[in-house]
Image (cartoon, rainbow, N blue to C red; front, side):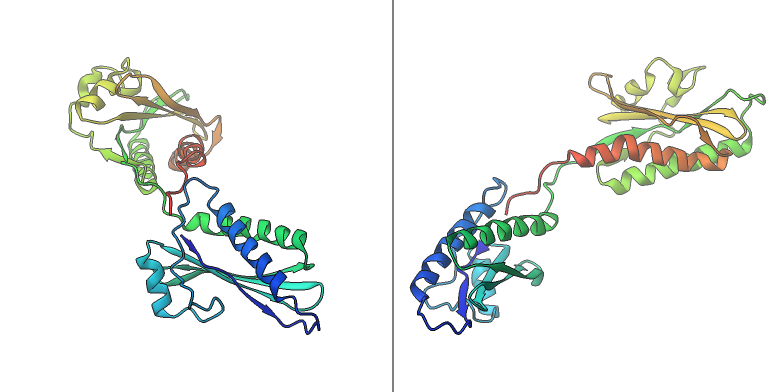
Length: 295
């Protein structure tokens, strides 16, 4: 990131020449802005590519943008402070994405007063706004997706019927597919195929009730983690969803969740399962994801 020296324009019409004090405050403002924006250890500032002949208030020409990019910046911050009257000043700030040649944000801030305290308050506010505005645009640090063995969701039928129908089988497949697509879209997981790879190791038991055989199967497939899911049917219109995520290295549980009692026939299983996985696995991980990469 590069922050070029801000320009200053006095259109207040005041008779006294305040250019010297304004220049000093402007230099202090810009230095503090660079310091505060770079306070985040993940933000790297490059020296200004705008030489002594560069007019801060001049238009952003292609040459000026190219010089900033060649200096190593991928975001350029420019600004102009304009004194409108004795008590009112404006600060115009623009951030340009040099990689995509587009304006990330452009704002006009108003602050009152023309003394050291007023300028300091304005700088603190503008620095915070810049950091917050640019945070979503920062590229997320890349990390390899986790290799995951997702086993088919299985049914525990505790209802009076007590048997799985063809319709139940189809909805279990739909549930597994819905969860698979959601995990793939998250970008956090690379799914390892498990169908036809010896899942009969569960023997007479279901995968979720085979004493942890899912971990061994997933390990042999080269997966880092294994996920098993169960639909427990209480009645034809009531069900529970639960899942467990194991690490194949230790066999320990990494994450688990239980939906609690939900209403709906078997066509509701996919909706209940995806909501549980999203709430208990994906969203908590997003809240603690790595900070943005440095600029």
